[in-house]
Image 1 (spheres, rainbow, N blue to C red):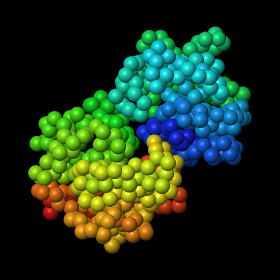
Image 2: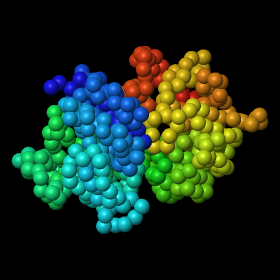
Image 3: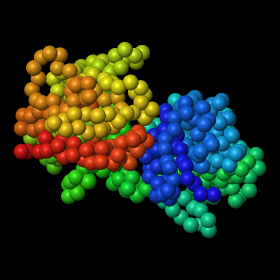
Length: 449
């Protein structure tokens, strides 16, 4: 049967990078297929099952999957598979599909999980992690590992907390387990259920050399940064400055000051502002200030813009507001957000494509929780170079000593492929070509001229 329609779960718990690379992998193998993201409300409603061939549950965290989908959502997935649909579960998507989870069983901490699950596509125990060092929503425990399949063929794959499949009831044949870890534990499971098919994988076979190569070169994702924002920002600079050396840096490395002499531009990408504050502290912040005062350039995107302002007001009317002074103070005013409704932390469910106006032109860009800049009716140095549709400033630049600052509340680094699920009726020219024109304008503002 030809796979013509694919949905990939992208609600709370999923990791942006896992969703992105799953889509990229599937586009490569099923070039004619329609691929889109799906969220819990639509999944539970169930109408999608009649026009879908493959459902993908990507990497992330199992608990939010269970919280959102247990009950009606699980019943819809079972119906989909029994009627001939295919289920692909990777890492957290494999834990979620098993009968029982044993996670961090031997090292009791806040990540320990020993619980039954109800989807039960693998009627056994999903046991993990297989390697030490796992930290939730972090790359620091990630490793490249050997996996053995078929006639002991070896392939190296990305691993970060995934499970092995323990057949504690002895009900499966060896042929159900398509690959093994180096220690002989089962890494990949296959079964036919009703009219449908199931594949579950502990390691991440969707993450290609483009991603894993960066990790092998000490790609760092410090606490607070979004891995997808880091990746897209690196990709942007490789595209526009192919001869430039683009490195990643941790908070502890920033505090050493060894990077200053060899660096032209420091980027603080999207993610969460509070961990930036916690990790960099005043000594890191003062080094960043000194770097720019002495001629360096600074780019802050979304959370990087909040962090760069004098004061932050985030989710002010919610039960979990974030409000307080910040100490870089490159923008001597307030960073206030979100501007658009629906924001959810560690999720794309509240993401939007928004129109911004700049330099007598406009572009459409990805938005997920970013700020606008409010000078509190006082004069601030610098220029607002971009506005949201309602006129609120969303792009700001200034000179700072011998250096330059540029910060944005929106994400100009997200390209058409990354935003495909949000683009609706927008044509390529309307999104990608206008986005690239905006990027060239932003880079010109950061230049020395």
